[in-house]
Image (cartoon, rainbow, N blue to C red; front, top):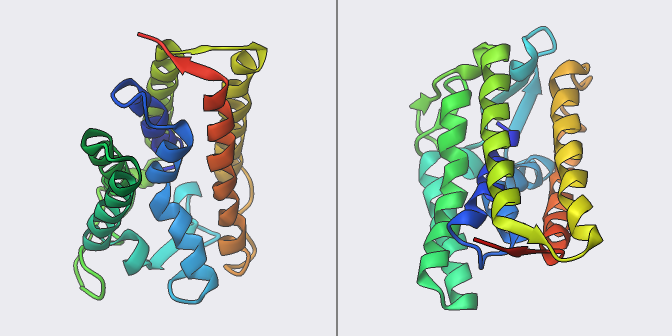
Length: 217
């Protein structure tokens, strides 16, 4: 899941307009922002299966800290709690925490059984939508379109930049998504963590978008 996580970030502005879009993108993608850091550090591991169908080319056989259910709940509480300490807004802190955990829920739908319940545990889960390339793309596009429509409907540009800014990110996200399944797989697992670090760039990008738009009922 990639576009679906960003869909949650964009769509959440409707229920929590005070939360900056950059914060929502950070929350929605937090597990995947943490993952490459742990890959690079050698704490978690991934393999390349170049002969697999597009969404199964990455063999995610070892990521218990970033993507187990228990640690995902922990990260949700941690990020939500940190937001509360900084902003003293309980409602928004709960939203941020839920957005963090939404990542695991969406991954549960798409992943094959590779998501651990607890770190080090033998039980792994996943409903396996990735086995259907068309099904995965369809779900992600539906979620993304809904999230974008919500964001564009409930926010209005405050200047010319605000009219264009969301579309710069929308086009880039869709292009990156298409490249991820239409292009060739990485030759080996070495560059994967470093390439995945690029997702951190979406956070300041989202803050910039939000600075040029305002919430409107």
